[in-house]
Image 1 (cartoon, rainbow, N blue to C red):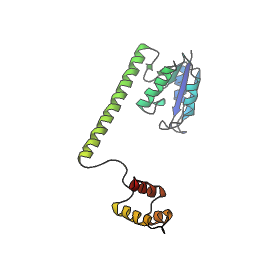
Image 2: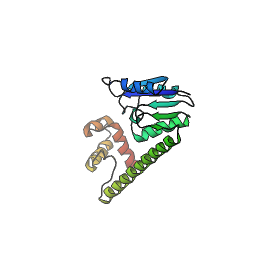
Image 3: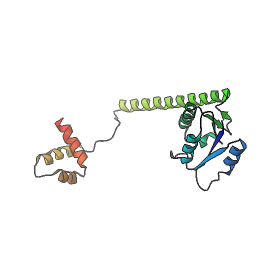
Image 4: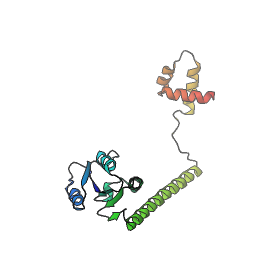
Length: 186
């Protein structure tokens, strides 16, 4: 059972020293690092740390935002650690999932994140319903107007016109031509 550290800074101009010192002082035997924005999903140092940590180990970070890009992402990563029987500890927020109070704190975070997702989903559905009631329909706009569709049919009915000619005339792709022709037949 060992403490495995993970430190991350967003840009090369930033220093890992503060985090490294804190992780060493906390007793981390091995520390993995990344210099990558939190918004980027590709973090090789984090992947190495997760692959390195074994059952009974604890992954330690200086702050919660060093591990997850967002609260749902953080919760997913901690759940992944839990599934692998690896603990999680954040030094600044004093969250430690190897203790009962740390587990409770993290479950509260999880519940709040789920609540936030549900609220966003409800607002989105209400907004879509309100837009539909005003006659607005979502989705991608049609590539062709009714007039252009008539021209497409006329051009296609004339055997002298190739699909490439139709595409150049209407400034559309072959896929669009075939999609509209298929709709007309079907």
